[in-house]
Amino acid sequence: MSILPTLPTPSVEARAASDALHAHICTEISQAGGWISFARYMQLALYTPGLGYYAGGATRFGEAGDFITAPGLGSLFAQTFAQAITPLIQQGLNQVLEFGAGTGAFAAALLLELEHTQALPARYLILEPSAALIAEQRQTLTQHAPHLVQRCMWLDRLPQLSDTVIIANEVLDALPVEAVRWDDTGIFSRGVSVDQQGTLCWSLRPASATLLQGAQRMTVPTPYESELGLQAEAWIHSLGESLQRGVIFLIDYGFAAQEFWHPQRNTGTLMCHYRHHAHTDPFYLPGLQDITAHIDFSACARAAQAVGLDILGYTTQASFLIDAGLLNVLARTDPNDTRYPSLAGQAQRLLSPAEMGELFKVLCLGRAMTAPPGFGRGDRSHTL
Ligand SMILES: C[S@@+](CC[C@H](N)C(=O)[O-])C[C@H]1O[C@@H](n2cnc3c(N)ncnc32)[C@H](O)[C@@H]1O
Image (cartoon, rainbow, N blue to C red):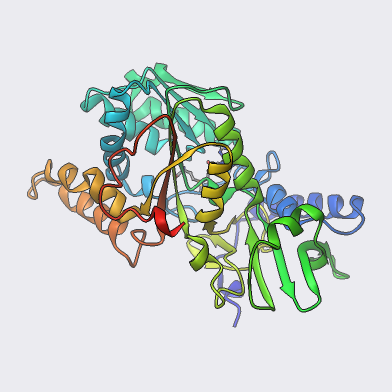
């Protein structure tokens, strides 16, 4: 039974914004001859200025929003990350670039901890496409780390980078994916059309040459449906082109190819999040729900190697955080301290295999650098 009828009802204003985005998408589909690719749909649903999920004014993160990311749990994630980054800054990587900085909570907690470890970078750069989120990030940093705000700079495009630590937590999963169907008659792009009732619906077209090139690499039993993260691969390629020396941390949920393209994962990994309910209908209330897909980390590693980046490590979030020193950070707080229960709760959610510990992975790439802390034990690079 579909869970959609049981989801919370949006406010009148939110519903009107979603209806406006729906109309905008239908117009584009009609102008495109009745069909757009799923990647284009996802781009419109998430990033249409003023109306898209990440570009509108709604609360997305935290209890009042739709989902919680690791930085939203509290400071422990960023504080532990700072332990992995500190030696890199001491080796001369004197700036940090965070992609998709969400509420700004990670940036604030990371900078405060790097101040504590005496490894403050000269500059903290943020590349964020959403104007609404940039405003939120500025506010968070001003509130929690006012004396460090002058080190922060918001970029509108990727510059040439040297001596930089790059971090992207849950950014890859927000990049539009192509939806693909393999069956006995061929390989198809699962795109989006409008049905006779005026409702958005799935619609198949033969795969384009680019899509075919990616899809033919996969050996899957038919029928099979899944997603190809071609934009994620292109994004990693451009990072590799711009980075002369540095380290890149990509943190997200996903698997190496063998697990991602498992015969039983034959309905793909698309997932939508609306007010803490997860479901699989990407056409539900466009603009009001997040749409994501899991990451094929083997494809990311391949894209990185193709542009000359080294794979410095790949492991689960739990293994990374423990190896980087999460327990030492936790041990700084007395168990009788009133802040301890919150920190212990964060550790549980970050590390537990039933929560974020196993599903989330950390892929570390680099150029002219060796592996940072976090990958000493439990490195799974050989599985990529
Ligand atoms: C799921 S949120 C994660 C936010 C934050 N990193 C966190 O962990 O809470 C995805 C973020 O990626 C941003 N984003 C999407 N596409 C991006 C791109 N091409 N470059 C940089 N950021 C992007 C979104 O605007 C949003 O801030």
